Length: 261
Image (cartoon, rainbow, N blue to C red):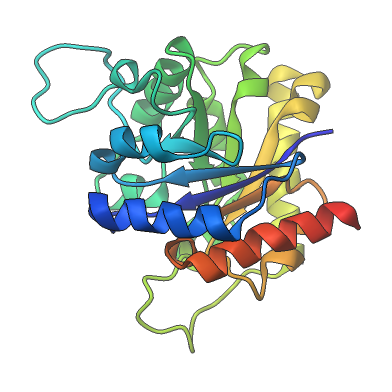
């Protein structure tokens, strides 16, 4: 059975002391669940001090991004090699990296390869824009992103890779929740089946069965259970709600209740 994975992406929020305080509050609120893996993705500045603070029986750390070359003259970059021993996961290809920083599918594929060779599990994000959704191109977009993103991964590597389906049109910037469009569980189920179908085609059924797929896109305590109930979804990539210890703890609790049936 694949262990449920709940990932909190803090994005460009919280300085080191604020991040430490949030971890303290999460430690108080979230019990250790054997069948749930809780991952926190703070800013790069907070990773090293938090690696000394977290209770590793409860939490693991993820970086939000890294550069695909292990070392060299790349001022300002942090490589996967430098993250060894600090993080267990790295988020790769988040939509904000793709569309705000113009990261290509090829570059994202190189990052997946770099993560694997440095014994870090990549959380590969895939998903379509609203224009692509309206043009009914979702399946093609997911196929292309997965084909290139997994190009450097072997069949054996797949069990170390997490795929996060995050439709770009469903990610809120927090400015207007009233008119924010959310995908239905049926929408998510269709996308997840497309993802799993493509992995089966590339690496075989056994690899697909071992791989975990997450849903990410404005998840919160109110909708977490509905998305966790979708067949083929093994967890959630949580954005804004992960900055609130009450809400994030409620999402972990929803995962626990889901697993208990």
